[in-house]
Image (cartoon, rainbow, N blue to C red; front, side, top):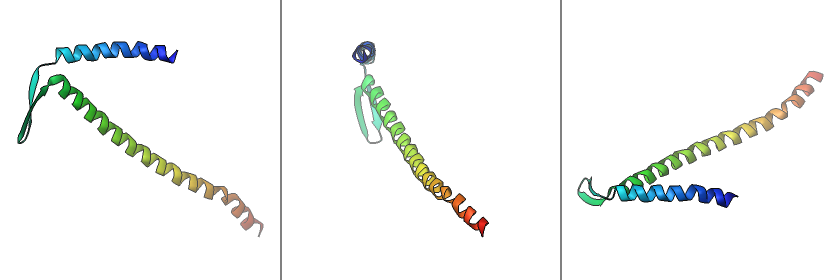
Length: 94
């Protein structure tokens, strides 16, 4: 079933990418300060998309690491607070 759904999604995606590449095959000049490169527009757009995905992935990983660090801190704090009722009960009985 998963293979069927994967195939069902993949075929239109491949057709879309092929049509996109065909319709944007003209060359464009990319001026990188001292370097000029002529590449197809479709390739430029796909490279831009990939760079954006990588930047988003990087920021997502940074946020995830921050959350894991906070979770570890809160777990340590929770473990310390679990002992608190015992300490309070001992001090009340004295």
